[in-house]
Every structure is written in structure tokens, then in C-alpha cells.
Length: 517
Ligand code: NFE
Image (cartoon, rainbow, N blue to C red; front, side, top):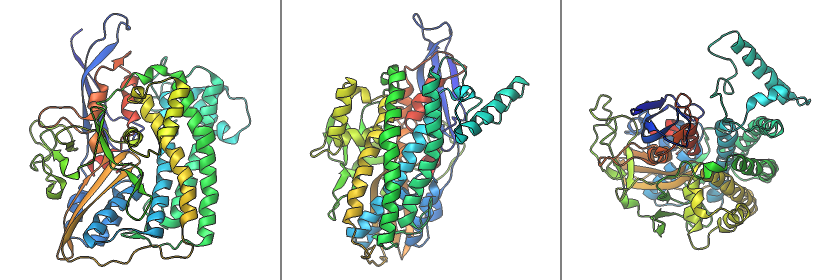
């Protein structure tokens, strides 16, 4: 069979507009007749947004508000990255309450985002939602869902092309899903429950963030909401509900999915070179709960922010390539020859690095005083897997659940640490001229903002965002980005329904709204 191109455009159940284009060859003996193997892949971010351009010339204090509009899923982390960048320019650092309140608001966002990724975004690649047609119980949520799916199946029978049961149907049909009705229906029930848990997680963040998804309360040096006893009690009661769900439902469902699809420990292997900026300051000197670092060729290195640059050879920008973000430029060039995406290609000492929960967990795992080591070792011992298997579709999915349990436990300690009715932020003055950068971790990975201030205005603002790292295009030397690499070698049983590729890409939880900012 000659090489054929298989595209998914757009890829659904992610945030934003991403197309995946793959070149394939016949998979050969041992695979089905129509099976193909992906030989190379390209990630295309299909739209441009321009937040960096919008920010130029504005009051620096607008930044943490404007950047939250980059995304509705991870706005808090953008605000915090912006605050860190401004704080560096203003010569302050969040202390005590300010630091803890920012952690709590951001941790609520992690809870919302990870539960969203598993249940609403990726589980439908594994769960047979049509099992709900055979549901015989009395749960109202399940019965409503049953009616929804029943309606779609009925209409499909009448030959309608577009079915009204999104996001459940239409879907890839075939031997892709869990077979057992009881497991499927338990997971479908948890899908419905997860919607409620996400609401509670958002309420939790809104208690100190004033509103969500775009908080008005996060400011350089902390937060504008005083931690009153009432707010702390209100936060803790919600935290317990979210934690209960994560410990008893989410974590076990992830393990159940892993047991049903063990070959996904082998699929979606990336470079294995990982970057984490570290996140959640646990003391006023800036120590972080998850350690920062870079894992290259299995060796942990100290993070060097000067080693980061963005390449633009294959991107729809005429901005010069290989600029460090302090000098970064964003000049759109939609028709640039040889370009295929609206993402730049971030590189670290010229290398593509994967970011996200897998990177966060493994960088911390290899760091002194690791907060994840005990949990990770216990899971590896229980499953009998070597740590190397975490570099896979299932490893990425599992690492979200691993880190969320640790974060939720830590949130109780942060609530205990708050000084009730104490000041929620540091005082500061905007500088006439200065510069700074904020490196933190969004739910999807390493997030950096760089700001330059001149004459009390923003002179330059650059963001390098998790999905820009993961879904980056080839760099100037033609080296594929991390998702492009993880797709290489993946076998598609039916190229007309490239489910295996979709699962690989969704394991990274891409957010294209962020990536093209
Ligand atoms: Ni729009 Fe985001 C996270 C950030 S991903 S979701 O998490 O930053 O590129």
C-alpha cells in the first residue's frame, strides 16, 4: 500500500481548534488488512488570537485580568504567571496569606481541570456510552442520559447525518470500548457526577477568587479576598466533597480504565525528555510543592530559564526564530511558505520537551525530598509496572490522578496555615520601568509569562504555554514536537476511524485556545 495521509480535523473533546495530519504506511503482517502505521505527524493549531499584541501599551495591572481570557479552563494559572512576572518587576513576592490563597485558588482549578479531562474529554474513548440504553436503575441523571442516547440512536436509524447526542454520538464505531455493561454504566454515572464535582471545585476557587472562571481577586502579591473563618469553613466543606470523589471514584476509575486497556502502557511513547517549572509555593522563600527541573536522557538538571527559546521556521509568524521570550515577537504571517500552524515551537537548549502532569510527577519523583515518590512507588508496586511505562497514554492519564490526590491533601494544610482575617496580599507599587518573568505550572504543564515595562506601560509581553510546548510544530531543524513524536509508530486498525491517534493526542489534554493565545 502506498503512503496515505490520515487527518483528524478538528480533533474533538479537547479545548480549541487542533488538526492532526499523519502520514501512514501499511502496518504489515500481524495487523488487520486495512491497518496502517503512522510514520510522521503534524499538529496544526488552526487559529490565531493575539493576546501578546493586545497587551502592548496597556497598564501592567491589566495583564493578570487580560491573560485570564486566554482560556476558560486554566485562567487562574495565567493570572498567577502574570502576577509572578509583575512581582519580579515590582520587587515583591507573595508571603503568608497571599501565597496560600493563590495556591488554594489555583489548586481548585487543577481539581476542576483534571476531573474534566478524565470524564468529559478522554473517558469517552474507552467507555461504551450506549450501555446506558440497557440501564435498568432509577437514577434520574442516568435516565435522562438514556433518553438522550435513545433519541440519537432512533434518529440515526432514520438516516439523519448529524445526531443530537453530542458529545456521546456520533463516535467511532467498532471494537474500541469496554465490553461489560456494569463497568460502562458505572463510568457513565461518574461522568454525570463529575459535572457536579467540577462545579464544586469552581465554587471552591471562587470563595477566594471572587468569581470563576475569570477571577477578579488575584493580584500581584496575593489576593483581594480576606480569609475569614466563614470562607475557610465554606472552602473546606467543598474540598472534602471533591477529595472524597477523587480518592474513591476518580482514582479507581483511572485504574479500571488502565486494566481494561493495558496495551496503552505501550502506546503514545514520547521523547521522555520532560520539563517542569514546579508549582505551589510552600514557604515564603519560594520552595515549591512539586519541584522544578528538567529531565533529559533520564538525568535531572537544574532548570535554566535562559535556555528557553521559540523557533518559528514552521509557524505562521514572520517573527525571527530562536528568540528568548524576553525579546520575543509575535508578527502574524498567515501565508508564510513552509509553515503549517499558529503555534511557535518552544525549545530548551534546542530540544523539544514534554510538559504536563507526567513531567511534573517524574521531575519531582527524581528530585530530593520528592512529594510524589511514595505514591508513585506504591502504584508501580501494585501494578507491577516499571517507571518507564509511565511514558505512555495511560501514564499521562494516571499522573493526573496521582498529583491531584497529593494536591487535595496539601490543601487542608494550607487552610490550616491561613491567618484568619489577616492581610491577603503584599503592598506594592508599579515600577516606571522594569522586567520580570513568572514560571509556574498550569494543569497542562509548564507556563511562563515574560513582561517588560516602560514608562508605566507594558512594552512587551510574551507567553509560552503548556500546549505550545506539547503541540509544537517541527523546529527549524525539522525535529518534531512532543505530540508529533508520540504519534509516530502508532498503528491505526481502521484509518477511517483513527481512534488510536485520538487517544494519544487526548492523553496530553491539549488546549489550543491557550497554545495559540
Ligand atoms: Ni487552556 Fe492551559 C492549562 C495553560 S494549556 S488550558 O492547563 O497555560 O496550554
